[in-house]
Length: 371
Ligand SMILES: [Fe+2]
Image (cartoon, rainbow, N blue to C red; front, side):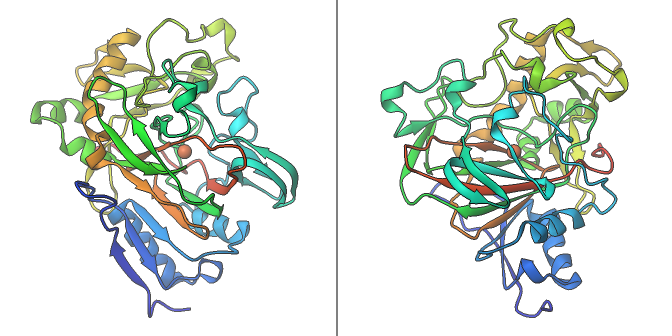
């Protein structure tokens, strides 16, 4: 199909009082049979709006999802963002099941699935915040209340660079109920969300909300990520709003990690520049950060100070008005610009609520660029 009939419309506000300024829905595209014109429209929309929602893609093949995702970074080697295999000790190990014929595509979700994409007898587990948060929602409230699980950038943050784009395809979505996200961070903030939403926030808004002084500071600062971060953090516990970890000395020492290659340690500017629009985003995945490198050459390596500094800068941008909670319907394909937005898994499913999704991304061909 050509580009005739393709429409790009900014997402409508998800609730009264929302102040989101990102996201677009594109209609009139058949992703299974995508030509260059249609791709160019999707690409332009992605760089401008950070998130692109393509509805009614039921039956979308893993191959077509992979092809579209790959087109955003044709020079990428085609390695899944977390590499070929995930260490059993990693906090990600239980969350991901690889499609055998396409290692860049993962089946994620919740519940029992007899057969899907060449896999059989799947028992999927939606990550539950109780496995990761220091103060989870009490069990008796778990049906109605929940937390943001972990605000993150899709990335290994060691050896491999964060993918440019991630695609999420909803093959099966349990119907209907909603939950309340409690921030439980002293602010009293909470928000009503669809069950199993994926929540997004904008790194551009996160930057724009800073004072001029903080903007100047983050523009010249970098963060260094821990080696083998998902193993390093495997015993640490997160804040109730999903934005980073408590500092209780639970991170694994170097002698309990796999061998560390200093050349594989990732260090990125705090601020990433959108190559098409020039906009600046504060893009720091605070959970695996180990050190801050300041513009004057000094290094902050006290973990508590590092985390408190990042938390102060990032917390304003996760308030409900700035969060887009996507309300999934079967057949939705959502693409997001992983160098401009952060996202979080949300919610807890009850017995019998089966969710079946596919996620695809690839380690980027080059690191994100600073301002
Ligand atoms: Fe993710």
